[in-house]
Length: 317
Image (cartoon, rainbow, N blue to C red; front, side, top):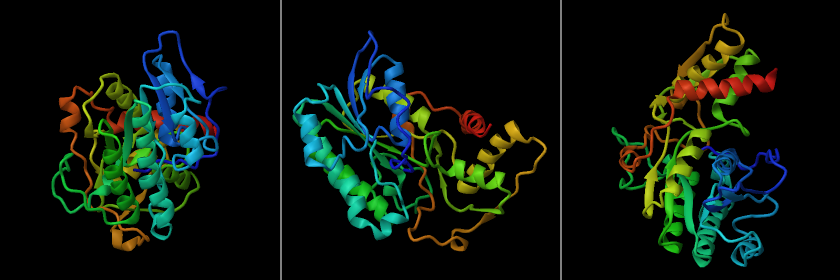
């Protein structure tokens, strides 16, 4: 999962608490300043739910005093606690094991424990990187995890700890996140293309890109329907390689800004782009369970990237 919880940009609101008269659920969002967290806060608030979204320096999921503030009602009373906080630097985690485990494992478990203490349901985000990528078919929720890097291992540890600490927890696995708020793979590709850099992208790793705005909308649907505890996969509908994802992202941006310019991105093997952390070769998540729950598929990647590109282009204007 590629969330960005170190984005320093403040939330686009005047307050850390949002509500309308038609409030139905009271939701606490940890990691609200991250790429996914910001879209969750906005989506829930726009739907009329009460949302408490503390800033990063106000709430660290592994900080005892911050957890105590939630337990004692400083932030209010809640129906749901959503954990969108994560250490997501996949390569950095290889040399920062303790930091990755603190947030993705220990902090996630402590937050789940606290949610259980206050009588709130708990929703936690995990990643396709809990799988080794050796499969030839999509991974369903019951497939055995076997992470091949520190990041994936820390997230798998987190899943187990969350389930241990909160019997009613919902774990949402997702993949290849991108969104407007902060760094993401398509934004990096677009910026490099704008600067005229030579682009080479791995073509032998396959997954489902997921737009955080669409994931936030499905998360809203999920909590509104009081799901049974357990794991569910929520990800974009399209299956593609990083190379195909890069071409689609840059092309969407090109079509809005410079239609006559070519998009040339060379496909390469993973062996030609060595990284500290190994990546799964094939980490496609099965969406059969989410469909059986009545959760509508997310928008096609072409449509999601068109919106994303328009928003990025507006920033550059």
